[in-house]
Amino acid sequence: MGCESTPEQTTSPTLDSIAVPLLCKHVNSDSDFDSDSSDFVLQSHGTWLHCGYHLTTSIVAPPLLNLPFAIGLLGWSTGMLYLMIGALVTFYSYNLLSLVLEHYASKGIRFLRFQDMADHIIGKAWGRFFVGPIQLAVCYGAVISLIILGGQCMKTMYSLAWPNGEMELHQFVLIYGGAVLMVAQIPSFHSLRHINLVSLALSLAYSAFATAGSIYIGSSSVEPKDYSIVGTSENKLFGSFTAITMIAASFGNGIIPEIQATLSAPVKGKMFKGLSLCYAVVIVTFFSVAASGYWAFGNGASSFILDSFVDSKGNALVPKWFLLATLGFIILQLSAVSGVYLQPANLLMEQLFVNPKYAPFCLRNVVSRVISRSVSVMIATTIAVLLPFFGDFNALIGAFGFIPLDFILPLVFFNLTFRPSKRSYIYWLNFIIASVFSLVMIIGVFASVRQIVLDANESHSLDRLSSSWRFRLMEETTRMSFSSYLRNTVNSFSSL
Image (cartoon, rainbow, N blue to C red; front, side, top):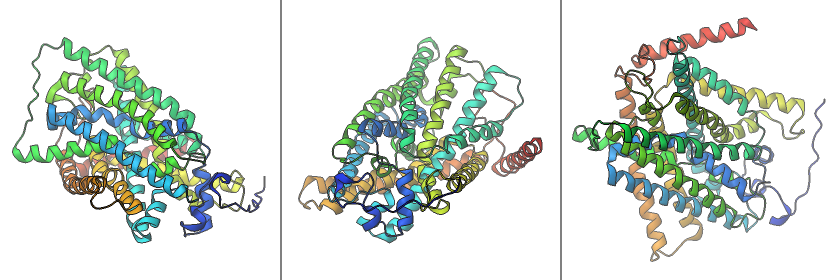
């Protein structure tokens, strides 16, 4: 079981003869160590169908169940308009980004990471100190929010099955963090392709169930629906920007270069096919859930639409099996989405702790990989226990990370790479979109932080199925959750 050094291989500079980028030798100047680590995590063996599975899992995820709430903050016409703008702009920007990647691939340079791209196009300082940290933060933040949501869904299922149960939310967050820890051990991005195909089917399933449930409740309810935007002028203004950032987070990806790096050469045209598959699913799921949810509940739609399927007394408004099945689909898909967004962190762990001079699956590297990835997920789970505001946290992720990575940088990269004439429409279209979303990003960050502060200082329930559990003030919640977490951890080790 000893580790043997892997022999160095001489690669030809032609694109057709390689399965991994030449970037590491020419552009990614940190070291060949980073190159070999990236080659393992981001293996380039995928087809356009695999690419479509990865894209769909990263975009069509449970945050889309926030959309009825976001529409409620904007109103029917404005909300649906912004939803269409989000779909059009992201499809456009992702295609521009793939064209930039294909352009460099045709020259024998394939970018493995978003940071590599930024290093080459806008400079190493921007790549290392802005794009790289932003991408890592947004992907790791997405994992945290997904663990929170997974715990909330498990808590809801538990409350449906055992209404008088005593387990609390943070305990389910810990349990779901354990499930994510196992998914984190999957070796490479390409290894997720079959899991992500199942994820695609699960996203269609729970979106269909959420749409059907909303229509059922809306049709059977005798209460009048209110579609007005409530609140003061200040609340309406900040609410609208919060809604826009939530929509941005729903369409957000942040890992387009990493996904395209999994494609086998030649890559030309494959990303467009994958995006077309992804956005066919996006159109079916996003618009059906958003429209049906807002139609059924109006401005009373919850920030997580399935919360609206339960009344204030804890009674399900749809058959219990229906709600349990929907939650089950969501919980299963969340693990796949978490696996996708762990890839940038896995790549960092690979570079720090795995020695590429030895075989990838030798004992030394396997142990290092398992320990480092496990610690990464344990930290994310601990943060998730302390931050139970999923909807607001999702909005902050959208403003802080997804907007610059998905709405701004692809357009900047395209203009800097292809240098279209300043008289051309595409130059000014890209410039206007990037400028508008830069302003939205700044205001959206303030609006999202403001909403988190408001929620942290209000005593209210996010779990309608357990009236005995209420959010305490942020300080008390943090203290009690963390002490309980430590107590449970000690007990677990004692039992071993």
